Image 1 (cartoon, one colour):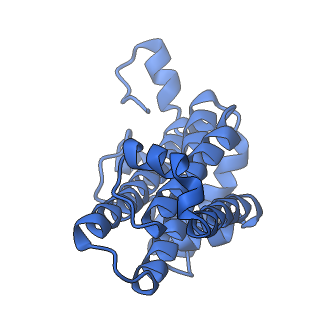
Image 2: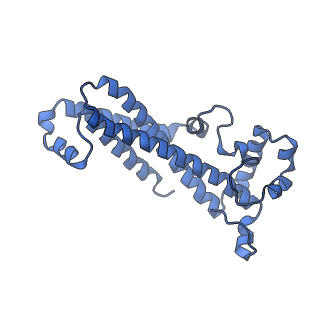
Length: 227
């Protein structure tokens, strides 16, 4: 995605600002943030410390998403060490897919013969990916998955930092802290669900392309739409 890095930088900085405001016991809102800048010297040295910690957390989030390998990113996204990939059950699932299950299993009998072993399902999908990765639908969905996963990892880091800082930061009224609990928690769970959802879409779109569903659509033969 063209704007992948700028979007991640903006997201990390916004979270850094939120952490800065929480550390200064400021209520959530633009007005409180602008007032903290106007009274920067009066808040010193707390303002410098809070800003420094927010910046360090933002930089750490960006470094993590740039340096961490896909395997570890997937482990953190799917909360498991083995088969940490959305394709681990691609051939045996109850979710609606853009093709018939019978057609899928007929095209990949080895999966059925293995008893739908997770390892075989994942390996089969991973073998298909290089064959179709340049397809426009796959390129688009994969880009969406990568950026959603990176957003999630940054949100995870800030949630952990916030939960560590909250007990240490004494005297924050709950009506102020509660807003940050909601913000950091809500964005974490939202991005968790979104990244997992887009991951499943990537899995199904690849299988749909491998089965030729997209070509049927182009010919107007009534094939199911891949997204």
